[in-house]
Length: 65
Image (cartoon, rainbow, N blue to C red; front, side, top):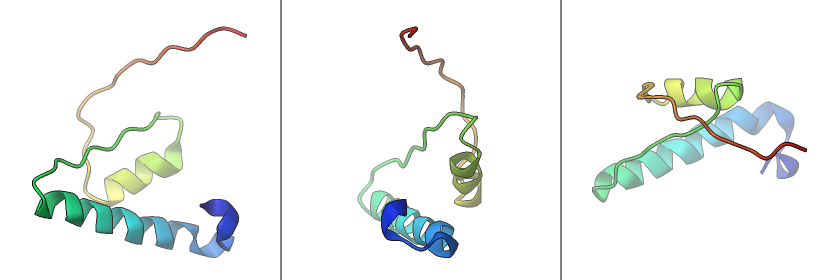
């Protein structure tokens, strides 16, 4: 998505799209869930701004290079 938008509009478009998706979920009895790594500060802050609260931490694994 970022490749198709002007940098100054990135957050505004994400806020709008995420809010629309959350509304759709709630209207259709789906539970919206947000997942991101804590290192992804932008995603983490956006989740908080949209009303999500930290529920728990789940470890993830990757193969060594």
